[in-house]
Length: 153
Image: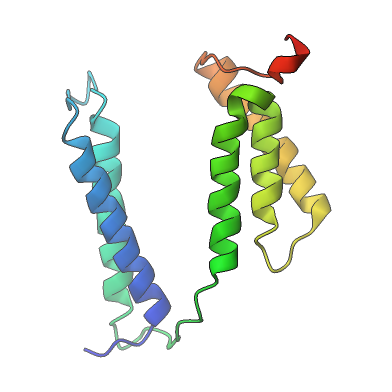
């Protein structure tokens, strides 16, 4: 077996590592059953599925039919932008509220793209804010500060 597609191989290995980490981390919570899921049930099975997916991708990169691909140089700037925007969203959530924090998360992380377009980032930000409102606020009834705390809600 020869490693033909290095991108697929290493991304598969990354998925396997993250999946194993989630599955092992979830074992510290009660599992429950499929009918009455405990807090560890979903992350455990999500980790198992991610591990299987990663193994399939990594093994597919070893196939003689795999398209040859080399790894590009790792771009730390892009990683910093994405991870920084997620961290900023978490820090600003209580201060700015869900709507502005999620919008900033999407808009700022979009800047990591080599083909950044502010109109597309604006549309994606608005869509994700509506999705978060619909899924988490209305659908699940979670309580988050929606607007900035200095506005007095």
